[in-house]
Structure formats: structure tokens, C-alpha cells
Amino acid sequence: MGRTASVDDELIHARLAAVFRASGYAGASLSDLSRAVGLQRASLYHRFPDGKPAMAAAVLTSMETQFGDILQPLASEPDVAEGVAEMARRMALVYKDGLMACVLDTMTLSGAPQGIRDQATRLARTWLQAMSDAAARAGASEQDAQRRARAALVRIEGALVVARVLDDSSVFEQVLGELPDLLAS
Amino acid sequence: MGRTASVDDELIHARLAAVFRASGYAGASLSDLSRAVGLQRASLYHRFPDGKPAMAAAVLTSMETQFGDILQPLASEPDVAEGVAEMARRMALVYKDGLMACVLDTMTLSGAPQGIRDQATRLARTWLQAMSDAAARAGASEQDAQRRARAALVRIEGALVVARVLDDSSVFEQVLGELPDLLAS
DNA sequence: GTCTATATTTGGATAGAC
DNA sequence: GTCTATCCAAATATAGAC
Image (cartoon, rainbow over all chains, first blue to last red; front, side):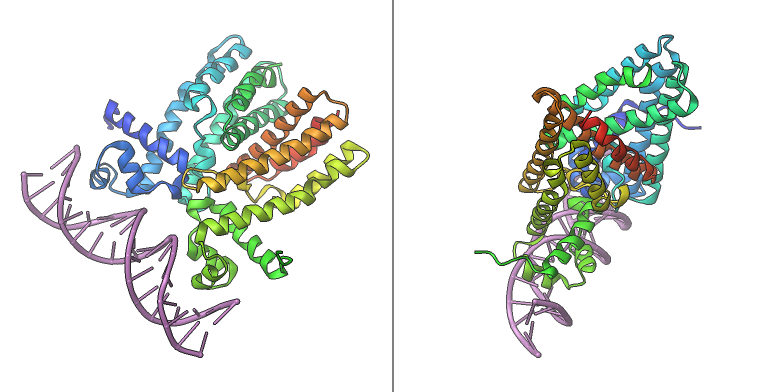
């Protein structure tokens, strides 16, 4: 059946996500997660009886849902370049203009459960497919569309790493600006 | 004074690096590091009295040294594009064709000591400067050279993330192939 | 310089009161 | 559903024998 996710649940997922994204799976301790959410550790276990792996899984599932919204303009905008630009604007929010890392990066290091890594791989493939479809709709061949989608994901993930290392979010904003041309030209 | 690093030291640093790169700073436990090096934990403390932070610092210092070699062709090759190609070949070795992560990514998550993050930032700046100088030597304006160097670092780091998430090293090889054009055209 | 043994703290997880 | 209290394992670190 599945009841609708309450606002509380969404808020909790967002706060858990902030810790996992900043610290990675191994680096996110139950104490960190508990503090961020504002509940005692035991209370977190009430909501996630399977512990930290379940919290991480919930975060990734929540991201999958969010990406449904973020990627939607890619498919629905008549002007593909404008759809890409809208995706970029929505990504700027999710990634806090480049200051917040991507789960695909920080939750896939060695130490994360295989199921989490698998979930991340699926999220990446969904994202690639959506960008590839958009590029194809803009006139690219199937092969070229996949090439462009991959290049876009590489630049986005790379920009987030470089922005973190240099503590300079302009790298990310620059890359977001390149996306319409990269995918739809 | 400083004696020359022994072969043993280099081997130990390489084995420590493999763990830190795969698991991140927080994810690399003393047990993991001990197992990888082939010494008991107490023996690691004999070599690194300041513990895990000192091990991570040694790894980054070792990477700085390695990067001296990797980046050298950028400055010394008369043909800049060929120098970039040679850098790319050397990077393929360090990153195991894209299957081994970059310290800049995995050792800069929240949880790593600030000194480690600072060391990573310096390494990134050194790398950027070397690529920027090469691009300038190939005829780019100062500003364009910096833009190209930044784009190169973004693509390299992004390719390593995407290669890990998709478990597909071809993304990284593709990016390495693009570097000569990106930096020297 | 490496080891075994141990101390101490933190992390993940559970029991049971409210 | 949240809390305090607690358990157990793992993580960091040290002491001291060899």
C-alpha cells in the first residue's frame, strides 16, 4: 500500500543526505546522523530498524525521487536546450551551487554496502538515459547522444569534486552553463 | 638533512595510498591500513607516531612527489601536445586506467583533518598551474590557459567518479585521449 | 623495528521506561 | 515515537617484551 511520505520523512531524509554527502558512507557516524536529524540514535533505529544501511538506502531512494523532478524538463520542454537549462537550474539547488557533494561520488567508496553502490549505479544510468534522450531529441545520433550524456555527467561530477577541493563554486556554475550547448547543439 | 626515502618507505606509502584512495580518509581503518602494508598496527605507529593523520599526510606528500614526475613532460616536451599525451600516459598508470580513485576526491570529504584537505588543495593548484603553463606555451592566452587547465582537471576527476560508479574504465580512457586537444589546440 | 597485549574511545545496535 | 541506559564490536592508540 505505502502511505504518502510525510513532510517529516522528507526532512529527515534531507538531513541524513546532507551528512552522507559531506562525509561519505563510512564517514557518516550514527552520532553525526543523529545530531543532524535532531533525534537520538535509538529514535533513528525506530525509523530505520535495519540501521545505517537502511538510512543510506532511504537517502538514495529519496534522491531518485528528486531526480524524477530534476530531469523532467529534459523530456517535457519543447525546446531541448531550454529543457537542459532548466535541469541545470534545478541541479544548482540540489548541489547548493556546487558546495554540496553528489551521492554518486561520496556514497560509492569502498566500505559502502554493495546494495548502496548498486542503487547509485542505477541512479547514474537513469540520469545518463534522460540526458541522452534529450540529446537525441535535439538531433544527435544515438551514439553521439550517449557520448554527450556521458560527457555531461563527467563534467558535473568533476566540477563538484574540483569545487570542493578548491573551495570555489564557480567551477560548478561554469559547467552548468555549458550543458545546453554540450547536450543540444 | 633528511635521508633518501628507502624503497620500503615508498612501498609502504603506495600501499597506504591504495587504501585511502579506495575508502577515503574516514573509511580507511588502522586495521585496513595494517593489513595492506603487511605490518601490525603497532608497527605502523612506530613509523607514524602521529597516527592516521600522519599516514594520510605521508600519502599526500608521496603523491606530490609522484606528480612532479607525471607533470614534468608538460614543461619539458618541445611539442606541447606530445607533452600532454605523455602526462596522460603517466596518469593512466597512477589511476590504474581509471579503476583507482584520486586522493583529491576521496581524501577531501568531511572527516579528514583540515591539514590533509589543505595539502590536497595545494596539490590541485600545482597540477592546474602545470597544465595552464603548458596551454599558454601552446599559444593560449593566460585566461584561456587557466580555463583549459580547469576544464582538464574537471574532466579527469569526473571521469574517475563516473568510471567508479558505472564500473567502466573506458570513460577515463576517453577523457585522457581528449586532453592533448583540450590543452594544446 | 616488529610483535603481543592492552587501554580507551567511538561506533553500531538493542532493551525497556515513558 | 522518543528517550535513557546499556551492550558489544571495532577503531585509535600505547606499553613493553623480544
